[in-house]
Each structure stands twice: as C-alpha cells, then as structure tokens.
Length: 188
Image (cartoon, rainbow, N blue to C red):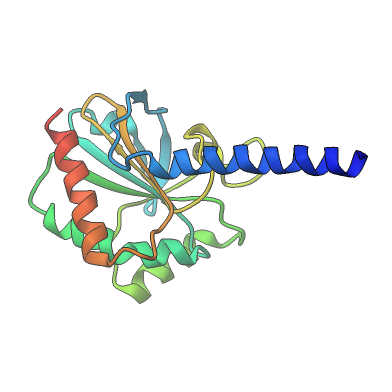
C-alpha cells in the first residue's frame, strides 16, 4: 500500500512537471520583455572600460559566451552574419561578454580563439563575482547558461533574451530570427 501511494505521488509530480515543461516550450520565442538591464562596467580586450550607459540611444545585443563553450562557437556564424548585415548601422551595437572562463589566461585564449576563427567581435570581460569566478554580470543578468543573447532597447530595457543554441535551426534561420528581433526592438 505504501509503495502504491509513493508511486501515485511520484507519477503526479512527473505529470505536473511535464505539463509545466510543455508550457515553457510553447512560450513564443519572440515575446517582448520589459526588464531594466543591469548596468555594467567591463574592460574590453584593450583594457578600455565600457559601460551600458555608453550605448544609450542604441540597440545593444549582448552575447554571453566562453572559449570552452562549444554551443557558443556553433552560434557564432549566425551572429557574425547579423553583425555584417548591421555593419553600416550605427544604431545597433554587438557586445560579446566573455564569462565563466576556467583558465587564468582567458584573455589570451579569447584573442587566440577570435584570431583562429577570423572573428572581429567587440569583446568585454566579465568581472569576478562573489563566488570567486568570472561571473559578476553573468549573475547580475540572471543567466542559467551560455550562450545567451540579450537585445536591449535604446532606453536600457531588455526586450529579448535568447538562451542556448538551437541545433535544429540552420545558421541562416538563426540569423533571420535575430535580425527580426533587432528590427522589432528598433521600432520600439
């Protein structure tokens, strides 16, 4: 009898979790958010400090990534295509936040990584967080993993958060999706 009760409770918990997971999967990827973006001050690859307020009046695309993150690297080609499409548009800025690195020489690893893949990304380095890791802004943005992209409007409001890499989507499709979301934010 005890076993049946336990089994029944277990099955109910699994069923409820499944319903919640299905509900999350069905949430439209293009649901616009209205969350104030945490302010940041991070150094770029040349040691210059950049802050979110430097980009007020522009649409900012933040991509959190790491050199060891394979899904991040798989996501780069589509994002790089979007960067090329917006090369002449000074109202959109792309910033790549290097975070959660495990090696102490992560700055050199980033430079080597970008050079070997021929990317000219504007990289900022996350700062050390209270956990002793390079995670201050990773934590401030409430992230659950990388890669994660945020599209922030001209007034510093996060409008979209794109978590992870979708292996079922071709690079061209991923680029088109990102372009569409940027256009929607520009129209706000």
